[in-house]
Image (cartoon, helix red, strand yellow):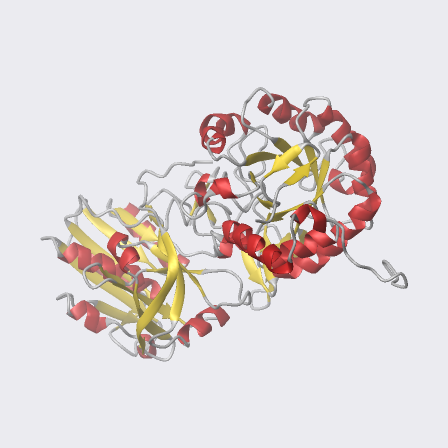
Amino acid sequence: MKTDPVLKPPKPVIGQYPVVEQTWLNEAYFKIRILADDIAEKASPGQFVNVRPGQTYDPLLRRPFSIYLADPEEGWIELVIKQVGRGTELLSRLRVGDQIDMLGPLGRGFDIETVETAILAGGGVGLAPLVFLARELSLFPKEIYFFQGFQSKADVCCLEDLAALNIAPVVTTDDGSFGRKGFVTEAVKDFIKDRNVQSGTELFACGPEPMLKEICNIVDFYHLTGQFSLETRMACGIGACMGCAVPAFDGEDYRLVCRDGPVFRNREVLL
Amino acid sequence: MVDLSITLAGLKLKNPVLTASGTFGYAEEYADFVNLSRLGGVVTKSITKEPRAGNPPLRVTEVPGGMLNSIGLANVGVEAFVKDKLPFLRKTRTRVIVNIAGNSVEDYAAVVARLDQEEGIDAYEINLSCPNVKEGGLTFGKNPAEVFRMTQHIRLHTKRPLIVKLTPNVTSIGDLAQAAVDGGADILSAINTVVGMAVDVKTRKPILGKITGGFSGPALKSIALAKVFEVARRVTVPIIGVGGIFSAEDVLEFLLVGAHAVQIGTANFIDPAVSETIVNDLQTLCEDQGIEAVKDLIGRLEIQERAVLFG
């Protein structure tokens, strides 16, 4: 087992934090803003928080969510969550003034130090860590291209937050009901081909596993470098339970999504 | 001030609250959240002779009342444990119990013999309820004769307290307990996880990569209490109760049915500070109940004579 990640993440904290905003973005996605200055101060793009869905033991385990945005000055973080099960349903019922039990920031985020040109590709709720990433990248003179895929028009959200960063994303929908029809990976591939994108460009992605597989293929084919954020089931979030293992690229060992990730580089893990 | 101290076969603990193997890493993972010196002790992840990568994903999933895991004893192996993990554990100012697993009796003995050369280990907990015997294919933790043979062999390699952790996945946990004690176990811990599974009806596939896994969590408590009660009626060695303990009240329940101490498992995943909270709450709970020493509670379950046991 590999035990030491390259970058040591900041010490996480745990506590009860007040919800200061709750917004439904569409039928399935909601955004909550939480006053959590100690988490906001330490958080970097790609990191996550492990949230307890309720105060009873049913549902039992915490749920991991990427940090959508963090404002260290105002001391809040935001999460964009897709309601898929009982845990997220309970979280969707949180209202302003309610407390939320959070542990974070956790994990290894995106490495942006040497990035000059960045292509960001999100699939569905996978856009969550990419908006935070786009904001950090936009603080420096870097070229940013944002691609976001949704299943259909009803899912489309968060575009105004990107607009506020002066980013106009290319949006795709599987059924063509909004933006370009087809998968986001196709749009990314066409862009790379048309613009003759060169090595030195970093491709950042987060989304469902088949999408990430295709992103890895694109990165390899065009000799780019890639970083992608993985989602899996986990229990502790701090590297103790070893439940969130994914196969390492060599297929002989595992990496822990909570501690070695959730952001991995291309050829670090096997998708 | 309530006296929380407990002595297990000569092993003195500040209080009866330990952490369960596999749920507390090598303790350093929890150092940001828990003052480890406040705990009665920590039990490490299972250590094997060679490093183990563990089972294929998915390894954990939530189910009603608890969770399933199929981690597969992922650990750094005994040499890396001694080099990278033990130095931290030595500084924790709490009891350090190393849980040991293996594929054969020789594996277990080799790990114990190696660790016996090191300072800072207070006891061993033998995990007999995981993989298969090299030469048979039977899960040896389920077979009293094997438990006896294994315990007896491991006993030869150490004078440190030996804890044998019992599986509930048998017809008679009492027979296993008796076999472990006959083989030379000083202390027993009960129970390990219960075999369970979960199915995804959309894909018609098992959710866990290894199909079945170990069930743990709140729903395990009632099973564990009954098993500890059964073991306590069978043998006289101290018992460490494990299974679904989330609060100080849960700890008292285990003491009343005959446990001398407890281990906190799955609760650590939900609240990384829970083990210390339970120690603090135990103090208050005992004060409120006018209990002077927690050891006075052990086995003090009040049973009406008419009650039918194991009916």
